[in-house]
Image 1 (spheres, rainbow, N blue to C red):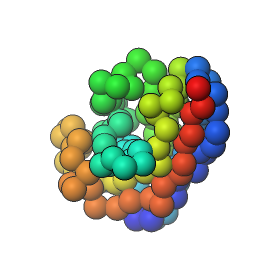
Image 2 (image 1 turned 180 degrees about the horizontal axis):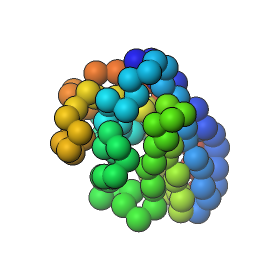
Image 3 (image 1 turned 90 degrees about the vertical axis):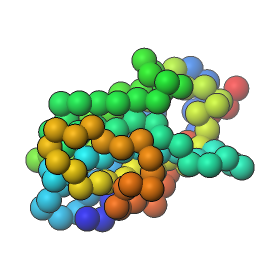
Image 4 (image 1 turned 120 degrees about the vertical axis):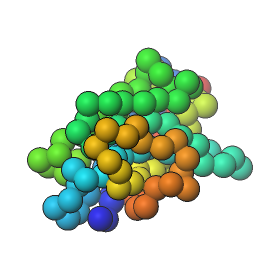
Length: 126
């Protein structure tokens, strides 16, 4: 599967952005999906993940209550709605896919993901 992330940009603190990830192929529903981010000088970190069906969502503590992940298996898309953005959210955001069993929660370890998008830059100004 090929992934393409988009929707990044420059926003003031307190603002919102919505990231999208479009997947190619007809097997999108066989993959759990995740969002990761990498800030300058830091390692890539887990942000959010969603199960194959979309029925389960998981978040890093730093974004819980502010970000929401969703997916549309008919349109082969995943989204990350980011609200109340903070300067600490500034990073390149990546979407990723991992083939899993339906009921297994998606991993938080980026090394377990099989496919990656190219990343989209989010910059939050103070």
